[in-house]
Image (cartoon, rainbow, N blue to C red; front, side, top):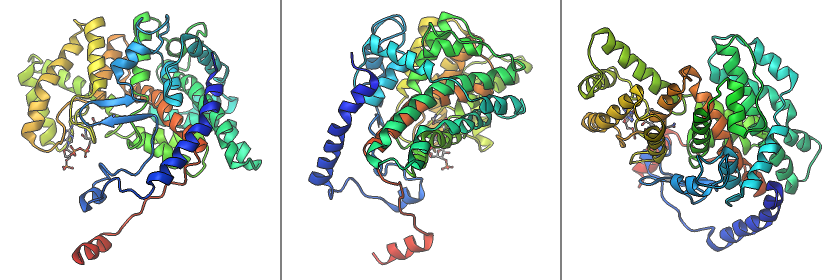
Length: 440
Ligand code: AMX
């Protein structure tokens, strides 16, 4: 079987030709228009970015290189063997996102070994991580840890050595795999430093990327390994416009290297309207439980509705609900719900999440603001992690950050291989918009 690099080497000239042809045939066709509302409203729905690795449909949800989540679960190799025997591995989704092809089990195993070889952290990065205050948010530590590893960038070195632009992809490939490999030990170190007094644990490289990561965290159960595989696969990519993917793409478009580019992505992920919702959902559920436990009242449809209205009336959002593009329940939510039914049907917190799912769309519809009253991915992830004893929810977004690199950096690889330009959309002032519209 071909290696990942061999596969990509064959694809690059074909994809370059395809893009050239697309521009030649259709370069001046119109893809859409931009209204004043869209310009002011964060660019929702404006079609202005090329993104190859995945595409999001408002009703159906995400497709990774054309495959839905259930199709990925059916087709991608797992840790134990070919597809169908447990959850697919992040190595498999990385292969799919980079190449558009379903890898064999052997190709995935080869990629696992390659990632392990690339995973060493420079001493100055571990020293920096170990010096950070335990009170610093785990996402800030995570981002700093990756930033410190930027000294290892092959792309930055190749560029300063004067590499020809047709060869950018080679050092980008090295950086993309290096960053993904290093994120697991950086994330594990942040976890051990913050919650376990800096006692570091060795991974187990006889396992896969996920299980090795779990061992470094201190988690040692086949159930949690499977959850980590599912988690790292489904958070990997969500087309290009979401804040973490877009930030990575934007920073990368300046020819800043993949380390710097992904630090940009991580910092976008750290916001509560985006990846931090992962943590916020668990916090919201804990607050809800604490309030009703203290009052000696049961957590049920009625009390959840009451708590939801308190949140909304206080001018806050319900974390884990709503989406900028989706208009139905997120399939990433649904597959986690199925995981819960399969592995933890009687879990107390899962039942709370399930009850929230029953009442919240009605509450948000009555509230009348959100375009999408249904749950997103973040509404379910925390409760699964919590079930296995991984309860430090301020840390949850770090796991999201380990995963999102797989998609965002696969696209950065293609950005450089296809020679995509500096991103620079046009901005306008309110005065300009007003004058322009009044003249029409
Ligand atoms: N609770 C309360 N109000 C909500 C809401 C929610 N869950 N979702 C949207 N709204 C409000 C918005 O704040 C906005 O109010 P405003 O007019 O007063 O500013 C109004 O409804 C219209 O917003 P929208 O068009 O439906 O959504 P959007 O595209 O502007 O924002 C999102 C999308 C995700 C930021 C928003 O739904 C939200 O804040 N959700 C809660 C946070 C969350 O779960 N984020 C994670 C999203 C997934 C991810 O990135 N990981």
